[in-house]
Image 1 (tube, rainbow over the protein chains, first blue to last red):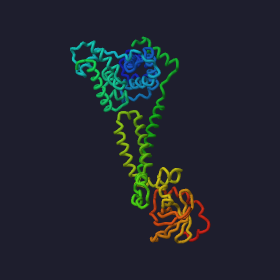
Image 2 (spheres, one colour):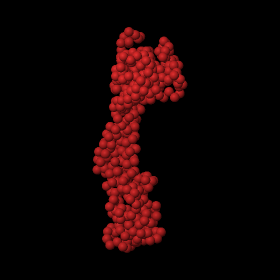
Image 3 (cartoon, rainbow over the protein chains, first blue to last red):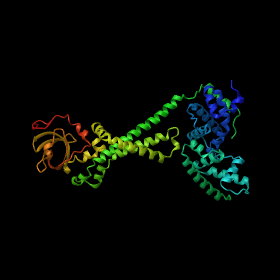
Image 4 (tube, rainbow over the protein chains, first blue to last red):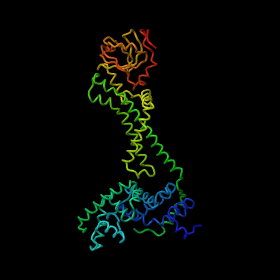
Length: 194
Length: 257
């Protein structure tokens, strides 16, 4: 029998070990990551909502199938995001795209992180700026959009991003710099004051 | 994006209904060992390629090519052991690819991996060369690879152009102190006449010895020797294929065995 209260307190890594003995524990992993991953799918692809849910199901099935491959030296969340990213990339071409582009939603806290990182003036109209930022992110190249999303919206550090996109940390830093430059260039074009 | 509330439960039911199980651990271990194994194997082949490169460079005959004729680019092709270099490059790329596909290989930059692999290959390759691996490799290739004389060791081809005054082959018979029968790389027999050579080192020519001559082709199967060149160690086993060919009938007497 699963003690739900106790299980909630366990780390992801502990839940993985328990899942290998009792598949019911996998529900905890699903519940912890379903919203995060669905948002992630929406941010890095432009698939339709119904396709996104199918994709999410495929991602969880893949996570479940590959549980024995999880390396405890990695963060479980990085491993999960890496699988999600891989699955999204390999399924993306098969799925229909939304006409309106990516779903890049941003909570206020994350928006503030982004503003402070790019030294944007805080007295500008927040909603106006937010909308423009989302549009700029939407229009950036896949590589740059992905890395900015992982950093500012998924709040991953460089090591985690490295483990997710399977590139060295130094390369992550260099892509990040280029992405920021590209982003700033677009901000200026859109008339957002820096 | 909205998500159905019972998404997790439905997915778990699906897993149970379809009896989906995590892939066993041994499958991942096997894949991991295969990637590492292939990488290490390629690394070793790369070091052997390095030992072959050093071996070919050591006996490059650079000093002889000036006398032997041929274009500059041709000499360059002969001096630089391209086959070994291409093999080394391929093996290094395989190591790089495999290392990148190990569990944490992506954490290292290609530059760091390449530097480490090249350094390791050269150091171990020099050691292999020192213990004679380069020669052994050349012998194995010469004995077994069909295109050895064209691709692996084009020096054999270069020295097998009687029309350009270069002849290489195996001594199969001696008719007189200054007349030999030679088998070239195409298994063609040549009557070799050592008339203009002052040096008497030809006296030491022995049956089944690999020799190189500079001179001129007098007819379809007759070659006048002007200079007897020192032995070329590489390619020995390529001509070794002809060792068991029967000696030509007739002037087979008086051969040193």
